[in-house]
Length: 474
Image 1 (cartoon, rainbow, N blue to C red):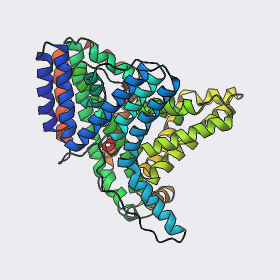
Image 2 (image 1 turned 90 degrees about the horizontal axis):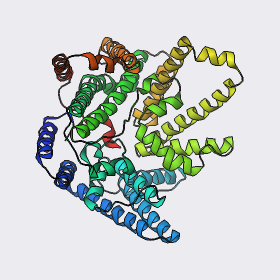
Image 3 (image 1 turned 90 degrees about the vertical axis):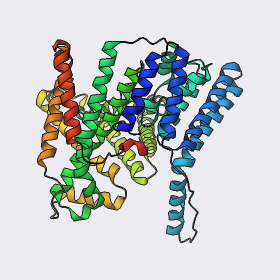
Image 4 (image 1 turned 180 degrees about the vertical axis):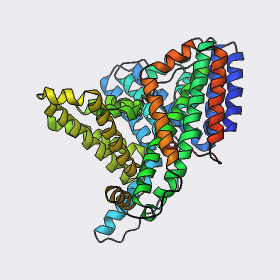
């Protein structure tokens, strides 16, 4: 049930109308809980049962941690929760990856073993709701929050359908109080929700899906295309993955606002970042902060020696890469970004005693150059993220770094450059706060026509056939 489909429009409209017609707060909770389970069951009803059962287990374990004062008992309950959540994640997502990797290693060592693969269906969004369950039980163990007493409230926190499939990763301490809070209709909030929904549709249909038409054929057969086509495909994919994922997040935020809930902002114009560290503070913010709070800091963070900080950064980014998918390309992608973060820390220390160099880098032209270099570096890394094998990535990197003849791109590059120009202008307007000032001073009828026009543009430019969201596979 894609956010940009007619099926979702009908589903959400029904939930929205009934939700605000119900006068009882608890009835609204049960409605959203039933709608969320139905939403997930529309993909696979048995996997919806898995999500529900694992949520009940975490609920009971957290209640036990709240009840017992013994440190050993509480640590044991936390261990059971972590083992069950990570066990489910490893079984469904990584079991075949580990078996295939072990079999390949045995073959390279001269063995002839053939390991059987498991016939499992990957639950959509398992990485997202697993991390949400872990942040809840860890925070209860650390006594940062009390265990939720109401089972329906807790299961709704895990399964709330706007964020269930692809985030943002929600913190229990932010979301659970909203469930217990009375909801009142608000026109400004409804308008904000509608704005998010329309913005997400424009990003997904008018940008991401059109950029996929340029990127997918090249990534599927990179050896047939020339250097120019490879670069255009890489740039198109950079736009595609950003508008696809941030478009989903915008529609998730909009759906939540229309139901009286607030989800965390997940993107802050990441392609305007001036360095890789800033990029990760702006890209997939809910994952970046989760990795920081529940992995990087527990490993020691930056409190130890420089070598220890480097180790912690590398481990965090490698595991962050593995979170994205069961493939060695994701692990190496995380390793590369970890190396870039380590390199940026070293460069920043080197610039410390050189004020003249810092002033040049922080000037307007210097900042523009840093933004361009960061964007091209991230785009270069996206090739490894998108490629399904190292061989395909090697071919693309080779052609990007040396001129090679081949087929032209599947689409004219002019659409890419126009899209990049429009996105750059939108970033500049949004970054300076100009958009909010314009909206606040524009009459409502004019805004309504503008939103209708944006929606028509999205529907007109959308290619035939709905494409799934990229982050559904994670």
